[in-house]
Length: 155
Image (cartoon, rainbow, N blue to C red):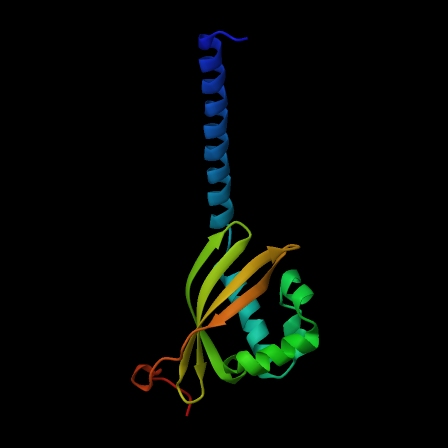
């Protein structure tokens, strides 16, 4: 049995080790987050949106994360896009909002703008896999009301 003073010393040592590990982990996480270039994320989303607009679902599927590809076959992915995300196929351009990163995951706001000026906000979730960013999911939000449409719509 250890004396009380030895127990306190041992607990203090383990507490110090845990705190040091937490500080180092937070520092490494902050460095990794700072190295994420939003332009890389924009490029992945741009390429997938371009493929979706062109009806090239097999190529758009290549930008999906492994988890998405394990959950959906290519045909199921195409069916899902056409049924639930058809706004992505109609968008003529995308404008990008804030990007948040946390390690190998990123979230970014994207505003899909259609030919008639309709703006559809969307949140894209990305994951860094095998040295590249992949789209891990997207959530379309309700379109903006007509009075909030883009002034520079292509007519």
